[in-house]
Image (cartoon, rainbow, N blue to C red):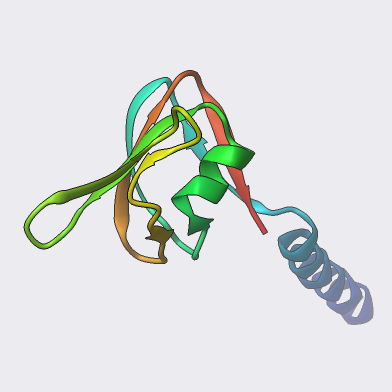
Length: 101
C-alpha cells in the first residue's frame, strides 16, 4: 500500500511540474480599464499591442508623470519595457487573456 501511495504522490508532483511547463500563465483583462502587476517581463509595449490588438492603451506612473503607449497609427507614445513587479494600466476594447510562458 505504501508503494502505491508513493507512486501516486510522484505522479501528482510530476504532472504539476509538466503542467507548469506546458500550460502558460494567463492574465485576464476586461473591456475598459484594467490595473495589473506584471509577474514576469512581457517585452515592449509595442510588441504587446501587436500580439494583442484588443489593447487600446498601456500606461504606468513614472516618478513625476504618467508614461503611456497608444495603439493607434502604428503606436503613439513611449515604447517602454513592461517589467516584472511593476503595476500597469491597460485599457481594452474587449475581454481577452494575455498568455505568458
